[in-house]
Length: 120
Image 1 (cartoon, rainbow, N blue to C red):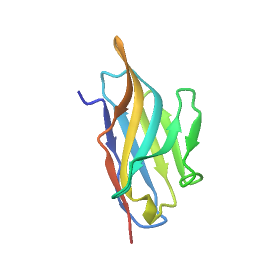
Image 2 (image 1 turned 180 degrees about the vertical axis):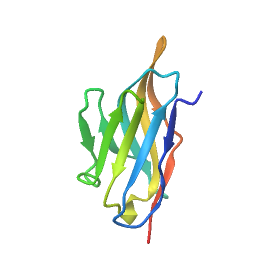
Image 3 (image 1 turned 30 degrees about the vertical axis):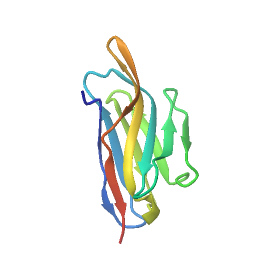
């Protein structure tokens, strides 16, 4: 069943901003560690940002200072705020999370991906 649903991608000009969302299904009762990945055209998927259940964050050097990862436990949603976007940020962005569900714990669940295109 669908566990993570992403939204918020689109086309933006260089220097612009986007906020990606990653919402957990109603059957999920907690998001624990959350990771955002991206896959540029013709390249491998790369880790962009991580937020732990305790709120600690880390970022790839290429996005540090421009991207911010956060979670809203009440909404069971994670966010990736992307500012000062560059053409090289163009990619399909994926969320990946460890989830608490009734009677089980799901590690490494993936969202479906959302396209971000930075172009003038």
